[in-house]
Length: 256
Image (cartoon, rainbow, N blue to C red):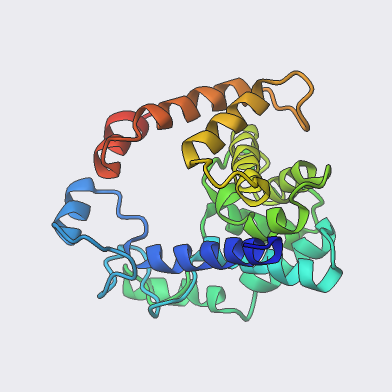
C-alpha cells in the first residue's frame, strides 16, 4: 500500500471507529454493559443506542470524533498545523449555533439527551476562548481526547521532526495536563510507526515495543517526564494481550 493510501486509511479508520463506538459510549456500569451486548460477536454501530448520556443518529461522530474533524478542517485550510487557526476551527465546531449548543435545552428532558455532548475539556476550552484567554487547556483533564483526535495530524507530519511538538500543542489546547500529553505523544509515535514501517511482518506488539524503546532513548524527540511511566503502562497492555478486553480493563486498568 502506498503512503497516501496509508494516511487516508489512518484518518478514515479513526472516524469510522468513533462512529462505531458512539452508541455504546460512556457505559460506566460494567454489568449493564455486559447485559446490553450479551454474547454478541459484533458490537460496532450498536442499535438502538445504549449510550446513557446522549443519543445521536447512527453514524454521527462523538465529541472526540468532531475534535478530529476540526483538526482536518484546519490542516486543509492552512496546509500545515497552525495553533491559532486550530483553536478557531475547534471553537466553530463546538461553540454557539452548532449542534453542541443545543445541549442545555436538551438537558431539561433528562438523560440521555437527544443532542451532541460537550465533554469537560471542550466546555473549559469554550469558556477560555470566550474570555479571550491564550491558555485554553484544562489543567486537570486527563481524558483520551489527546489520543483520539490526532490521526490527521500524524498522517500529515509522519516522519517530520515537528510532529510531536504539534501533537503536544494540539493536546494542550484543550488539556494542559502532563499525563494527557505523555499518553497522546505515545499514541502519536505508535500511529507514526504504523504509517512509516515497511516491514510487512511487523505486528502491533512489535510496533509498541519499538515505541517503548524510543521512549527510553536519551536522545528522543520531545521528551516528557512521564515517558518511563508510559513505558510501564504499555508493558501492562502487552502482558494482557491474551486476556479478553472486558476482563483486562476492570482487572488491570480501571483503577490504575
